[in-house]
Image (cartoon, rainbow over all chains, first blue to last red; front, side, top):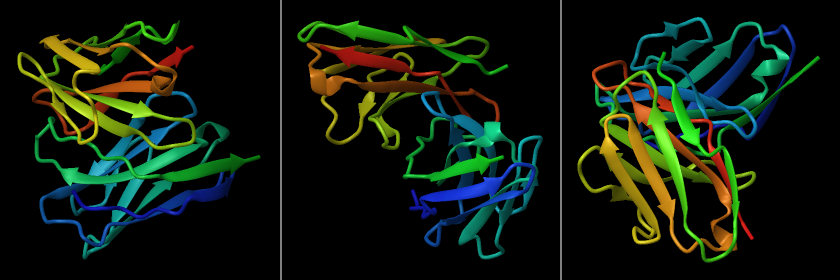
Length: 113
Length: 116
């Protein structure tokens, strides 16, 4: 699976959009981009995933560049409860629910009042 | 939907004893479950992939005889830490994939193991 690079930490003001970048320059054509987050001392929570088109759900939006070498997770209106470590992971998807996830160090997002 | 539970949520044991952690998919069937370990201020490290009805596949550097994994049904996988020592103290997390569903995996809440 391709390696990802994320900033170690970011701050965001409550109510503003949080934009979390991820670089995955070695991504293969059949690899999806997944985002998870982990609130302190809890299990990770799935946020969103995509292949090449931008995706949006009730939690966030995922913007993938045309060359697929980077992506941005957008939390449109960050709240204090969004404070967590956010992980960007690339792996083979396509219905392979047995595909393992390899976690990097992630971005520690702090949402401040 | 897609809830994964773990039991116990925390456990304290003496050095040399064995500890069993259960991972259950409550409202879906999971042919594959994964076990992770997380030390303080570190990321999750994949330990093994557990497939229902077959032997688990362990990641490099993970001792299969120390971390016994059993996946006896489509809703239950267990991790047994045998002869636990203080260095095994960690946060153990399981995840399960939704068979036939979307691609995401669902994670349990984790089990905090402290070995005295």
